[in-house]
Image (cartoon, rainbow, N blue to C red; front, side):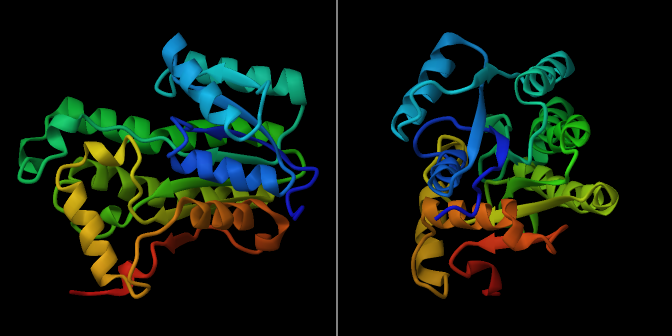
Length: 259
C-alpha cells in the first residue's frame, strides 16, 4: 500500500493511542506518508504523544508544541514547517475542546459566553487559522481534513456546545473548500462515530451513546479507528482529487436512521 507515497503533511491532535488522529497517522504511515506532529504544550503532553508515536514505530518524530488558540504558536509552527520541509501536501486537523462542565445532559441552556467562545475557537476557528497558514506551503495543491461528529447535525443529549462547534466546523469546511479550490487545495470533513477517546469520555451519557449506536447502526456495531483512518487516507490521497467540501460519515450508518 503506497497511495500516500511522496506526500508529506502535518497531523494535529494526537493525544494518545486511542485518538482518531493516532488511527489516521497509523494508516497514513502504512500508506507511505511522511508526517510531522504537534503536542499540547508541556512535558507531560509531549511524553504522551511520543509514547503514542513510539507504538507506531515512529522513533524520532518531528514534533512541536502547539497551543492552537495562540496565533504566535501557529505562526511559529508553520514557519518551522516551511523552514524544515519547504512545502506540505496535507493537514489533519483533529482537535476540539469544550468545558466538560457544560457537556452534561440538561446543561446546554446554562452554557456561558466564555465556554461558548472557547469551544468555537478551539474546535472550529483553528481549522481556518491552519488553512490560511498552509496555503503558501501547498504550492502544488493539497488536502486538508478535519474531524466532526453527527452531534453537529442533530441534537445528541450531552454533546451540547460541542455540537454547535462541530456545526461551525463543518460549514467552515465548505467555505474553505469554495475559496481554496483555486489553489487546488481540497477541504473535507470526516464525521466519525463515537470512539473511546479522552475527549469523548468527557461527554455526559457517553456510555449510553455507544450502546445506542451499536443497536441502531445498520452495521449493528460501533466504528473502529482504522476505518476512519482509511477514509482519511482516501481524502488525503489523489484518489479523492475530485472531492472537496464534503462531510463523509464513517459511523456504521447510524446517521441514516431517523428514530
